[in-house]
Length: 94
Ligand code: HEC
Image (cartoon, rainbow, N blue to C red; front, top):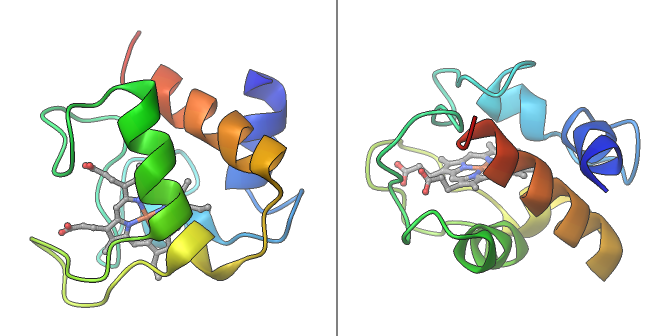
């Protein structure tokens, strides 16, 4: 599941462009925050909270000017959302 998640994050599966805003290693760009850093901007950093924010996006960012579209603007299956959420969770817990 974590491996699938990495592929989703990198856009190799499901055509999401997470890395375009969050960086190829998830550490952020001027368009999106560092996903490896704590504290989290949204929620408590739990798997459920991360999955929810990936599914819904972030319409009103706290620190960035452009919103995050739901699922990063892609159509991800529920399994792909779960996998990428697990991968992002892992980035913050190592
Ligand atoms: C268009 C740019 C963009 C894309 C594409 C994008 N994000 Fe985001 N993401 C953001 C912004 C902006 C925020 C909110 C930052 C803020 O609140 O200041 C965010 C927030 C998040 C958060 C919450 C971080 C926290 O600190 O609580 C997660 C998790 C996340 N994104 C994961 C993803 C994943 C996974 C994908 C791909 C499916 C993705 N993002 C695609 C821009 C993007």
